[in-house]
Image (cartoon, rainbow, N blue to C red):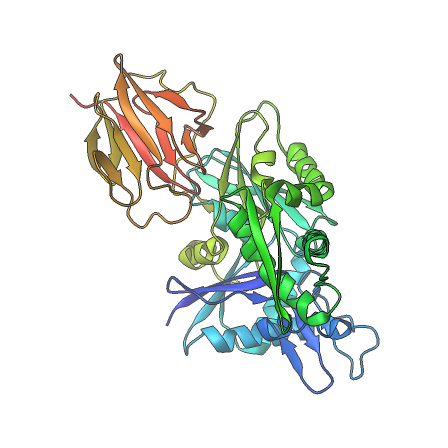
Length: 445
């Protein structure tokens, strides 16, 4: 028996069981007269038969019948089919589910979700706000903002609390979803291919389908380099083009501006805060750097599984969903960083602590990162994405401990990102990467 964490969002259902993640199941249904397809099988042919595709049944969850359907179907019917298909694929006898739902889901929709789960035969152990679940375990400041770019909208969840993280407010940008942004990027790719090869991938349904399926891998590739080669395969050969990161950001400018406005409106100028990006938001080229430009705002990017995995791990604290309820507060695993205190203002540090082990800091550089290497090192084995091989270096210089950042994803002292190098003092918290590993600076002897 296991508790399965399931994130419910219009982009996809994401399930985590015993630490293992099932392939995300896209929130798409194909209303074929012969049979109803949901999830990945529906998404794989949605652009071949667009008139039969439906992708709003989670965002607009209700029992109202869809127009021009005989026999009648509702969004709830499609959600039932989708959840039932996922449960059959991931669950075993005796398993229960805990749902992580976005702040945009209204309470009556949460109740409808629980009713659908009962009809499917899913024992429900709890329901939790996805942003709260994903952020409660992070080494973040007391004020936290979580940004998720869903399929049809963007959602900013504002949270607060040094020892208990509680949802405070939810704001929505209804026209800044990934569907609209990906449409702009598909047009960008199409125009680049037409200029180079005179081949238009949007001219035929099959190549349009292929373009949309490959977009996420191109976006992931361009995160670490300035340009990416894009290609579409056809019976007549492969057609490609080269696109720069700045072309993607310019094509998405209208939506990036809305997301920036959403974050700026939620950030108080006098309050140090942590901005947490969902994996869907973090995938968008250069978006994170633009949003983190506000003074006093640090940034963390989450892995795709964060809400579902955290929901499963915190099921005892979330509590049962009978009577129907929604947990919007969880205890924090890390005491919130205060922010605002100048790094190094405390007593001089002599050691850095990781997992209970003290590492001396002296005039010989101490490198922190994943994997092996020469010289003195603290190896963060299995740290995952967001940690570089040689992420940062600690060294004693003129009696003062300094940290030097060498990474793409950032090194942070008490929540403040290191720009080049920064002094450290005893009592400072050093976070390496995003979401990061936290080390403590202490004085020994």
